Length: 244
Image (spheres, helix red, strand yellow):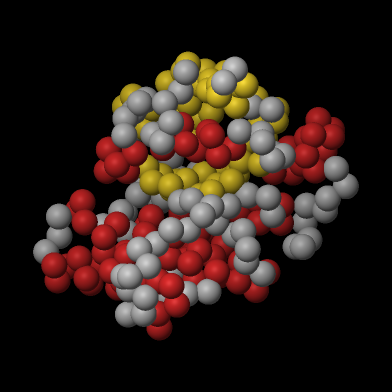
């Protein structure tokens, strides 16, 4: 069963087409990687799916429900949440308070909300930082906090926009393990934009390639990364199995 369906989506800015007739279907529990060169339309696609932008054409459905044009907070409450490349936590709040704020729409008691936030903070590896302000976190910690805030909403679908960017290989591994666990133990559907091809090859069930706002290819990772069109448009001679 498809939990996310994108049909014929188009989006233009001042006449420049960022997305053109994009179709996308994500099965419940699937992990889909989205790759492509800079400017291919990847983040614009996430903005449309998550409600930050209204498409000029096409529809977005979540679990069969048409959510096209809904505000991001309504889509989040329906179960689809995204992270951002630029982390902007509330600097004056602690890590746990940032996570608690993200979960408030669940209408838990104050005690349950604190317990839920601390549980999520522990799960992403930020337990020792729970009661420190967000500004104390290094880059890797801020990435984990962004993920924790999304997880606190108990999403059905998680849209991850370059969640590994800025992390060294040793910092990436625990995040990849956590993402795999989310699918295996909780059935969370993951759609992630990523430039680190080793992570894509390890995590994704399927890969969608965008180029100039259009779907260039979609399929199994090995199939897509051996496609001459994808190599020409994006991969070049980049190794796909060894971490950089």
